[in-house]
Every structure is written in C-alpha cells, then in structure tokens.
Image 1 (cartoon, one colour):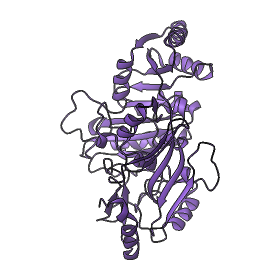
Image 2 (cartoon, rainbow, N blue to C red; image 1 turned 180 degrees about the vertical axis):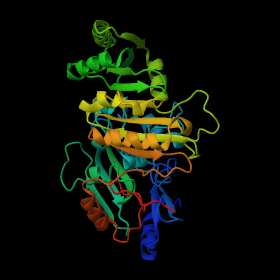
Image 3 (cartoon, rainbow, N blue to C red; image 1 turned 45 degrees about the horizontal axis):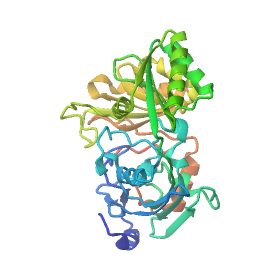
Image 4 (cartoon, rainbow, N blue to C red; image 1 turned 60 degrees about the vertical axis):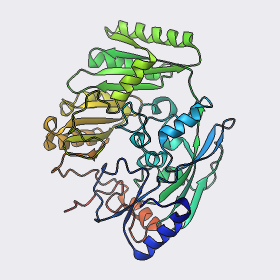
Length: 403
C-alpha cells in the first residue's frame, strides 16, 4: 500500500478497526532484513509518497523532511548549501546513488544502523531533533522540535530509532545538519593485529578527531585500519596524516595514503559494493545465499573479538570507537554452527549479534531476548495494544520461528 499523504491517517485508522496486521516501510528496499513477519500475509504500508523536504534552515543547520524522502535526494539538496546529514548510507548501498538503493531517511532511523561516521558525528539517533508519527490507531503525535537545543518532552526520537517499525509509523523528521567538509583524505594501515590495535588505541586517545576509524577486512585478507580525515584546510590534513603515518612506522606498520576518490571507493566496498557481483548474490533482493550480520561489543573488547577464530573467512567492517560493525559471507563460507558460535563469542564479550539476512533454509534467530524484555513488551502494549505493527519484529524480544 502506497497511500497519498492525505489518505494515510484514515488508512491506518481503518486497519486498526479491522485489527489487521501491517508492516510500516519506507521505500521497501530492505524488508527482507531481520526476522520474518509473524503473520502472513501482513500488509506493507509504504511511505514512498511522503517524499518531500518540507523546510531547510541553513543558518540553523536543521532540515524537516517527510519519512519517505530518499536519503540520496536529501543529501543532494543539502549539498547545494554546503551541508550534509552526517550518516553513512545503509549496507548494500555500494557506490550507487539511486533513491531505492540507499533507502529512505525514515527507514534509516527505524533500523537505527549507523556506520563508521559515528566515530566523529555520533549515530543517526543523535541527528534527530524532532519526530512526527502515527500510532497504530491512527493517532498523530510528535516530540522534540525544530531547533537543536529543544529537549522538552518525552524522548520519542530515541525510542523510535531502531524500533524496526514495531511501535509506530514515522511520518516526519527534524534533523540536525552539519557543514560539508571541503577537504577529505584517508589512510589505510596494514600490519600485525597487535600493532594495529596499539595504533588504534593511540588514535582514540589522541587530540586527532578522524571522521572514520574502522577495522576493515575483505574475507580472507588480513585486518587493516581505514581512517578518514576531514578539515577545511588541506595543509592541516597533511599534517595529521603525516603524524599518523609516523606513528604507524614506529610500530612497523605500512600506511597507504588515500585520495578522496580512493577513500570513497573503499567506503563503498565496506557497504557491500562489488565491481562484479555474482548474479545470485541477492544482497538487496533478499535471494538465498548470503549472510549479513550486525555485531556489537564494547570498544575495549574489539581486539579480543578481532582475534576470534569464529571470524575467519568473513568480510567485516567494525568501528573502532563504537565496537559496532557489519560482517557478511556466502553460505558456503559460514556454516550455521559457526554463525551460532560467533553469536556466543559476542555475548561472552558483553555484546550481541543480529542476523539481518541469512541463506534460505537457515533458521537462526535474528536477535535474542534482551534483559529488559519485560519493559520492551510493556512499551509495545502501550503503543500497539492490538499487536498489529511488525508482528515478530520487536527488538529485544526473540522472534518465534515462522512455520
């Protein structure tokens, strides 16, 4: 269902009266991620026609958009004013800039999956300063405001970020923008894991503030650090790069300088780009054959995770400062028993593993019960008493297998 904006509220009210299950969606480009919806057929309600940029205040560094606005179109509009939304496109975007490829801004917030740019700019929930939504019964609500300093009211922004459409339908967002850095360069550091970890720790404690500090590995290749530096001054970037390279040389590491286009290409690979993807890769279409995992551990536990044998053969990008990352592999490279072992390893390190996509025929739970499950379920009952929204997709509550 792709209703016009003026029809949306009445449609939601009608679904509520029928107690019909439905799934909120943006552009519906990644509906196959996460657990299967528990009730089939569950109607998909897309916000693709809520696709307008409603107001942009360049002087205040804020923008108000409808939830179905494609991320790529929002970034292009902000770029006209030398501004941007400081978030990574979702995994699977690669280097393409088509609207459906990068998804909608509402979908990005609903999944809450921030990339490596959170090293400097924090996550997507930190970019949201106001939100409008429709509850399951069609009641409209909003929270936050249109200015960065507005913090009054219940923090629905953080509650809805990462809710996977299980609590409400996001309709509008007020977002914080930032000046677009005029200069950007990168470094890729390779060498032994222990020496890389020491360099990473030095960087995190230094006065330098890289945009990105990611652990990076493409399958069977060794670990490397990918660093993105941004500034208004090219000379400043050169000095920062020289400082990092000198420190790397002290540890016997090899540093490769990356020009902006090389850095962008490497970042695209870290989002799943493949110059010659196999026809059966199915990473965006939801076809069988691929694992896509979301991992998270405490930053202090990242070196221990990277040394784990359970990660062998997986391609992976992991934020050094956040401990959050993505791993992916074809079915043949990751038997399900190893995927389960990797989940146990993450849990042993105080973290978690979320299955965003798995090969056909596998039935690994997308996520497990969180310690706060009773509170999560109580919030769900308040927002959605009839349990209509995204049945089986309540983060923090282990999904019941769909038979």
